[in-house]
Amino acid sequence: MYYTLFNPFWKRQNKEKGEFVMFKELHSNIRIRIYTSFFSRVIGSMIFPFMAIYFTNKLNASVAGILLILHVVVQFIAGLYGGYLADILGRKRLMVIGEAMKLLGFAVMIGANSPITSSAWITFLAMLIIGVSSGFVNPAAEAMLIDVSTKETRAFMYAINYWAVNMSLMLGLIVGGWFFKTHLFELLIALFVMTLVTLWMTAVLIEETLVGKKTVNKEYGVKALLKSYQTVIKDFPFVLFTLGGIAILSLEFQRNNFIAVRLEDEIIPRTLEILTFSVTIDGIKLLSLLTVENTLMIVLFTGLASKLIKGRSERIIMYIGFILFGLGFAILAFSTNILGLFLAVMILTVGELMYVPTRQSLLADIVGDSRRGAYMAFNGFVFQIGKLFGALGIIVGNIIGGVGMGVIYLVFVLLGIYLSRAAIQKYQGIKHGKTAVITGGV
Image (cartoon, rainbow, N blue to C red; front, side):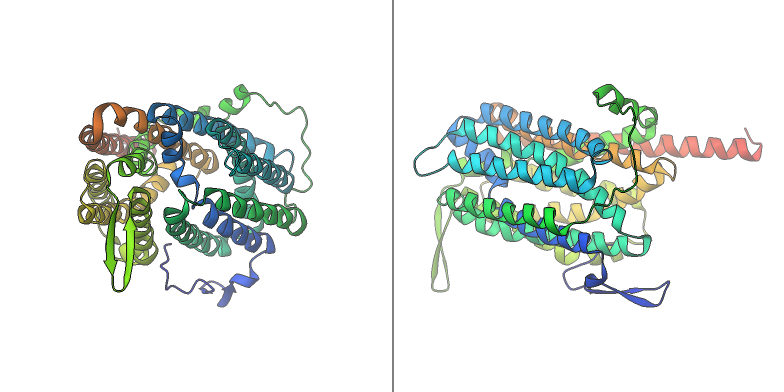
C-alpha cells in the first residue's frame, strides 16, 4: 500500500477489527526507531550523497570510484554478517554495538575534516567504520521491527517509515546542497551529536526482542552463509528477475556518483534573481534541488500513481516505467541545461512511480509463499550491487564522458527489460507446467 504526504498516517482504519491503529499505539521500539532513523537520515543526507564529489576533489575521479566500491563491498559483507549475528547476539545488543561504532567513525571523520587537519584517507577509514556499523545496525533494526509488529500494523508501520525516509532525504539534501562545501565540519559535529542521542535512545529505550533462543554450534564462516541461499540461487526465473532489477537500480545509484561529479565539474555557477533574493547555483546545489524534486514528487504522487495503474497490465507499465526512468537518467548524464535537467528528473520520476509498484507486485508472484524471507534477503542484493555499479560509473564516466554514459544507461534499460521479460516467461512456463502435471495434462 502506498501513501502520499496528505494521507492519514497518524490514524488508519483497521477494517478487520473496526478500530483505529494510531501511531502512538505502535510498539515503543517502532516509534523510537522511526524517530532516530528520521533525524539521523536528515543530517546524514546533508553529507553522504556528496562524498563522491568530496573524494573526487580531494583525490581524483578514478580513486574516488575505487574507494566508494570498497566501501560498498565492506558494507555488503558487514550486512551479511549483521543479519546472521542479529539472530545470535540479539537485536538490541547488535544495534548498540553498531551505533557505538558509528559514533567512533564520526569522531574520526570530524578529526579528519577540522579547521586544523584535512585528510581524505582518514575520512575514508572513518567511512569504512561507519559502513560496518550500518551493516550491523540495519538488519538488526529490520528484524526488530518485524518482531514487534503484527500483520495488522505492519503495512501502517512501513508506510510511515517510507514517508519518513523520503521526507528526511529531501530535508537533508536541501541543507546539504547549500552547506556541504563550506560547513562540512559543522555538519559532521551535528551528525556526531545526533548519533550520540541515537546511541542513548537505543541503549536505554529500546527493548530486546530476541528472547528465549539459544544457539548451539553455530557456524560463522562465509560458506555457512552462502549455503543458506542455495535454494534461491537454483530458482532461475527469480535470479533473472533479480538481475533485471540490478540493471535498473544501477541507474538510480549513478545520481550521487557520476552524475554528481559531472554536475560539479560542468555546471558553471550562476546567480538567479528570485523576487528580492539572489541565489547562486552551482553543481552541488543543483544536485540537491534535482533530488528534492524527485523525492517530493514521490512523496506527493505515489498514491495517485498506484490508483492510476491499478487494473492495468503490470508488465507493460513496468516496461514503460523502465524506459522513462532510463531516458531521464540518460539526459542527466550529459545535459548542462538547467531546465532540461529538471525536465529529465520529472521524466525519470514518472518512470519510477510506474515501475516500482508493478515490479514489487510481479516479484511477489515470482517469489510465492515458500521461503519468502530468503528470497527477499537475496533480492536485497539488488541495492548493494547497484551501489557497486554506481561507484564504478565514476571511473567509466571519467573515460567515456557523459554522452557515452547516457548510451550505457539506455543499454542497461534494454537489458533490464530483456531479463525481466525472460524471468516472467520462464516463471509462467514453470507454473503452467506444474498445473498441467497436477491436472493430468501434458
